[in-house]
Length: 469
Image 1 (tube, rainbow, N blue to C red):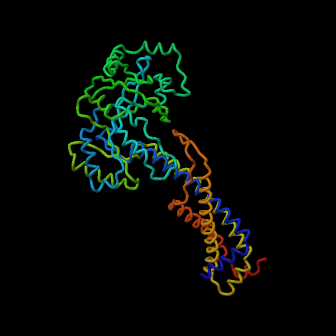
Image 2: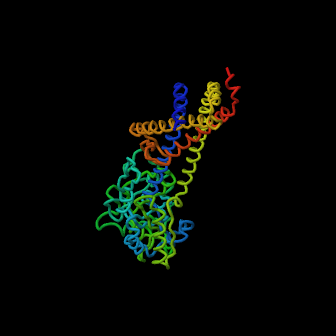
Image 3: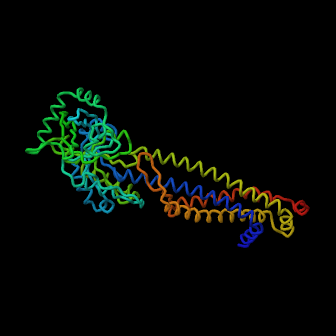
């Protein structure tokens, strides 16, 4: 304790130099904490997006993740309703469960055959109420909430499409889309001439079958499309859909092919009159920290209750490889910044302590002459480095948290790749690991910086130190 008091007194003897050194450490702490808080917010944002749309876990038929995209109908889960009932009623899993819902993904051809245009599409059958509850998941308190699906309250024939697909299918005018100029008339005519006759005939028969008595099949706004897909037996089937809205999916490749429709409609399209199936069961948990326990319990339940249905349980990090890649990239950037800041702090504190040793050489000789051992001299300078590091880290943490709070309330926004603009949020306060790691790193770097000057001071000869000028 006396050693710490003496070290503090020595630091206060040259307040300007000590303050300058601490300012350098505070700036370093700001850089590490603010960038770390920004990276942490990106991590939470990505995780929230994936969990809102795909859940924490997905139960799929074994092999669907690798090979199912080419033939999703063959990988349907027949007992998905029994599985859902089992998950929802399990006393261990139910408290962790936020939403469990089936989905059916299929590929086909979406066409506006009245305009003579079509293109390949990726369709997803959804349970709208469950999807709306999944969209409300907000475990990290983000200020922006998603609006309910446009399919909410619509009939079984309703659908939503990506903005790019709406352009290609010439739905701009019926859907009143802005910035959606129609293509040249010659191109439309050419596209219409290339349509296979059997597809046009099949679409026409479906439209007639779907048309209400005495009325046209097209919706009130005229935004109707046909979705052609192969059934589970390989035969072609087509559904007439009323497009209620075109939504930007923010990833062009996905935006150009996306069709969202009610699950029952998708099941009729793929399985017809056969028992319906689902290609996946989405499981959303209340908190991400429950993921390991929930996955273990689900795997146990499926193995014991449904041994005849080969399934696998995949989490969102496996289903979305970009998540892990983005986290690895930001971890690399954060590590690079931390190393640079550590080097700056190392040389700053080292220079301060070296200067102190030179200025106090006579004092060191006097202390040695009075009986203080070499280890005592070494401990004295190390204590000074420790106090500098601790003070700089603590002041840096509190001032960085205050600066992050100002940024969070400033109303600044930024646009993540593939997303609309979101508020700029820096998460510092409450990130215990980040704060503790930064504080510990700064103290350790300060101690390392003080070690060499302390060693040099402890090795001084008494006579040489007393004669130092």
